[in-house]
Structures are given as C-alpha cells and as structure tokens.
Length: 465
Ligand SMILES: NC(=O)c1ccc[n+]([C@@H]2O[C@H](COP(=O)([O-])OP(=O)(O)OC[C@H]3O[C@@H](n4cnc5c(N)ncnc54)[C@H](O)[C@@H]3O)[C@@H](O)[C@H]2O)c1
Image (cartoon, rainbow, N blue to C red):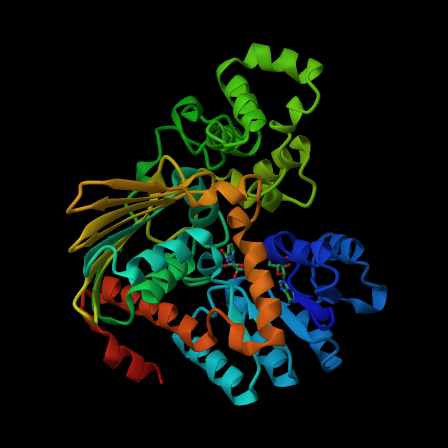
C-alpha cells in the first residue's frame, strides 16, 4: 500500500464503530481515522479514544464535520438509512471517496442522485454489500460460471431471518416502520438481490407477494401488558419474551451450541442444558463465564452500558422491552419475489422472519447438476449433485473463517476491498451503478407487492432515470 488513507466516520453506531472501525485498528498502515461525527457523546468518545482522534477531530453532526471542507481521503457514512443521502452527497461533492452503508437511500430518486453524483464528480462510491466479499458467494458464482451445473434453469434463494432477529430489528427496532426507514425487502434483501444479479445477470420482470401476518395487536396473548417486564402472564410460552433474549441470551447461546469452536460449543450446551453444572463451572473453569457474559450485537444496541442491570433498565423503558404485539411496526414478516432473468431463468426469493436459525439457503437446478447451498453465521456448505454420475461433492468454504467476526469476516474483506479500490479503482469488485440494480429490484418488488402488478424492469429502470 502506498500510504495509509486518512478517513472520517459519519455515524459511530453499531456498524461504524464495530464493523468497520476495527479495520483501521488492525491495519494502521492502510487506514487511520482522523475525525468522527456522532451526536451521541458516549459513542463519539469511545470511537475517538479507540482511534486516537484529538478533540478538534470530534464533531456532533456530519454537517459540523463537513463544514470545514475536505480533511481526509475517504468518508465512511454509517448513519441510519434515512440519513444516508445528504452526508454522502455532501462528501462526494467535497471530493471524498465514500463507503456508504446499505441501503444507499430510502427512495429510488435519492439512490439515482447518489450514483449520478459519484459519476459526475469522478469519486468512488462503494455500497456495503459485504456478501460479495465472502468466499461462499465467490465460490458459488464461480461454480455457476464454470458451466458445471449446465444451464441454470431455476433458482430458489431464501433469506431466513430468525424469529428473534425479526423481533429485534423489524418489530421493536430501527427497521420496523417502512415510512421512517426502508421496506424490509430493501433493508434486508438488497444484499440478496445484489448477489442474484451478480450471479445470474439482469432481471426482465418480477412479481411479489407478502404481508405482516403475525406481529399484530390482535395476536397478543390474553392479559399481555405493553412491556415484557410488566409481569406478562405469557412469558414462559412466548419466544419473544425480551428478558430471555436480552438478559439470559438464550437464542444466542442456542446459536453457539453448534459452534465450530469447541469451548464455545461446550459452554453453551452446559449453560442451556445443565444450569446447575454451569454455575459451578463458572466459578472453577477460567473463561467459562465469557459465554454468558457476551455483550455484542444485539445487546449493544440496547444501551452504551451493556451490563445486565443497564440492559434491564433499557427493557423497562426503551423500545426493546415492548411486547412484540404492541409495537408501532408495519413492515412485512414474509415476502416472496418471483423474478424472470433476461435469459429466461426463473428465480424465487423468499424472505421471512420466522426461522429457527439465521441464514440463507439456496438451490440452483441446472441441466447437468443441482447445487444446494447453506450460508449461516457458523456453518456454510455447498453441495453439488451431478445428474450423470450421481456423485455428490460437498464444499465447506468457512474453514478459514472460524472465529472471524463481522458477517464471518466479510466486513473486514469489504474494508480491504474499499481501501484497494481507492488506490486503484480498476480493482473495485463492484460499482455504485451496479449496486443501484439491487436497489431498483427491491423498489420494484415493493411496488409489485403493494400494487399486485408484474413490473417490467426495463420500464422501471427507464422511469428511474
Ligand atoms: N451491511 C450490512 O449488512 C448492515 C447490517 C446492519 C445495518 N446496516 C446499515 O448500517 C446503517 C447503520 O446501522 P447501525 O445499526 O449502525 O445504526 P446505529 O443507529 O447504531 O448507528 C447510526 C449512528 O448514526 C448517528 N447519527 C445520527 N445522526 C447523525 C448525524 N447528524 N451526524 C452523524 N451521525 C449521526 C447515530 O447517533 C448513531 O450512533 C444503516 O443504514 C443500516 O441499514 C448494514
């Protein structure tokens, strides 16, 4: 690398602070943060301290930071969805190369404005589609392109959002209201649509169906109060009971029950299945308590102080302690998109928030072989079933990533890709214009769902400008 890039961070929340910030700490020869804009004082101070940013580099808002003109090479924009457009446009106009969180913006018009501004100013605009940087999807794309499956005829791709992640983000949390942030098909599946476009090419037309069937007032159990912490009579039977998720972290422990890391696997199993033994082990075995003492996402979203007491206070007063049936949510909890690719391949994308486990599953049926894929946080597998020989090849692309954090290490790969692309735009794995395509598909799918129409993508693209 020629010299470390200097960077500014706009929005030191969950993604800015924890997904991308660590890259600069691990690779100071490539990237260093020189300024941060963050209204929350505790978050701002934490980020500034970790990155050695002096007081004159600490700002409350992006407007304050950018008012001083361009002070670094690159800008990372990691604010919430509705606050992407203005800071990203302002940074591009000042001459920054920009890494912008997905979705680019909450309206199609703003997405187009962003792409056009990047192209006019000649600046790099990269959208955080980290799935492109995973070994799993790189491999899957390579297999399809190699012709090993023959001509791919149908694809089924499922985004299985777990019941507790659905409740956290799309019922109680930031992405619950499509009028404020983004419709769920954009917020959650712009990644999936980007991958499908990357592997299969442009879409000719699409239709979509979906609604909010479960997280509604009329489904509340009898006598349930507005908050889980107000003595809910259904607590024992309710999978979404907030203290079970945020204090006892049961769903998170269940996830690590199958962790490839032996110590994690054993600790989770003992805590869940043998609580009395776990209490003894916590006193006697060094490191055992760490499993129960997990403080990362989604707990870190509740409050800056992640102690059990602070989390309980947050449940008693904040959005994450609300009964899932009494929230101000309107986003769907299931949606399918049926796409016809320009070459005639038919694709079904299924997104839903009722899965036991978190992760994507997929099936590609070709004229020569069928590919089955499973892409989860802790395990990833591709199987190829050959029609002629009947042989089955199983590939597990995760092996190098055991213990990696941040989307299985993909957030770090994305940062590496961004830094390289700033030095040499020719190595960029994707462009803002390419990322626009997944957003067009998401907006088209939402229009199709709401109106019941079949959307012709050429017309839709043309209308977007
Ligand atoms: N790439 C992915 O897979 C992925 C995953 C999760 C979230 N996201 C996206 O990342 C973005 C950020 O999500 P998050 O979970 O980190 O949200 P967050 O709320 O934790 O962080 C956003 C931060 O922006 C700050 N902010 C608000 N107004 C500001 C202003 N005027 N100037 C500067 N900062 C300001 C907030 O105080 C907050 O700390 C969202 O758009 C989200 O959709 C992407």
